[in-house]
Length: 205
Image (tube, rainbow, N blue to C red; front, side, top):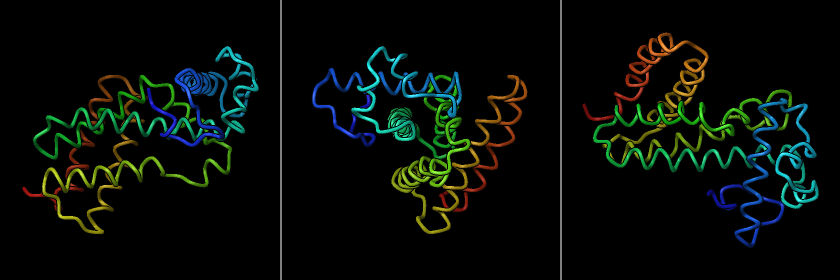
């Protein structure tokens, strides 16, 4: 379970039961947005899915937007934990790129929270006013890993190359998930070398 420290709350839960309730609210919000869309999703609908009173939702989240922001931060924490675990046995940087791409792809397919956040930004100026928060955090962490584990030469250009590779990798994953299995394999096979070429000038051969 991701603790409430992973995302801001109106009120911090002080007991395990309260923390579980927050997680249930976020799961219900994901399902509501995926099924009904962000505009049609409602706090009352989220409360009904979570099987709690609507006041319990407002106890932690002042509005629908804050729920989506909390889901995004929970996504960040879950994704970071999954990538770190899978990178433990990786011995070269190209394999590390593959791990980050495949982990994002897998979570986008299996975790409703990822799809909910993608859908939620449509039409909400405030949610769209701070794009790239997930990418920026992921890029910073991945740049530090490439430097520490694989000898990347840290520089402004290196950081930009990492940010570009992360953004392109996520776009590849989104595209692949819209295609048939054969088409997805083709897209990923063509895309991976592009990601490698972006990073190769900054890493040992």
